[in-house]
Image (cartoon, rainbow, N blue to C red; front, side):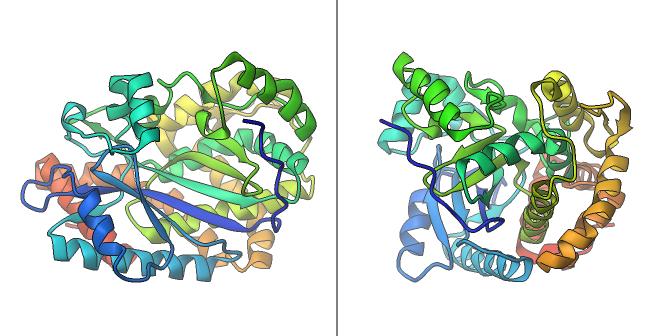
Length: 379
């Protein structure tokens, strides 16, 4: 079908989506509970939206369109509380984290929806391996051209969001040595990675999407699993590299860090993006996935090697006036503390060391989601 016209949205408006794990409190493995949970949630008004995802051990929640940090955080807290209450009634635990640390992909069940069944038929076992959990952040744009500018201007900051959100160190019972192993699963899909370098929406629509549609490979923007993709029907760009954090407080902070960064970029405070910026893109992405905040990236303009944590802290300082103007100073403070104290991946490894099992890690994630940032680290 033809690509949707790019809908005009309020610049820098926000929407957050979180893919969440459904866990059995008895053995801490994933459980096929999405149908029962969704049926229960339909009986009362829900403070956002909640939908099934690829397999029956996961759900996705989404906020309304928000413009500032406090209302976004409050809606995420309200959503969390409703989910926890419903899960308790069904004896189902709910948590964040980019991967479940020991579930077996072969035991997952594809949700009985035409799109998911079609993806399973196309991608085979990769569909079940897509039982991974990410945070997606939508940022409103006034035009398709603005969306493509922001998409490419953000290219050098993608490692920030990977490292800050990293919460998937374990896969199938083993420490992968990655902070975000989740993105390795995404990269297996043929239409993943980064968007083509086009800065005019007319060119994107006519020179790229129309040709891709004619090949029969894609039929809509949903078929692209890019790190950042435009969503013309919403009038947004969608950042897709984040693991689902262990708390909704962290999810709100990451979204507002992106919002402040987009405001900074829209004021043309940096040189315009060019195709050559992507020469170091995959290397920087790998560094953030593998080493998290301890990684080292290459600046795409100067080719200078920069410690990732140092680059994040420098960016936080630059963004302070933009965050203040948006009412998100508290979000920036969260990011500052996170950069110093370590990511959720570090927290999960610490819990594994202290509790001695992957089941203990899941229990810690369940408690972290339920009680949020007020919960003290064990030990």
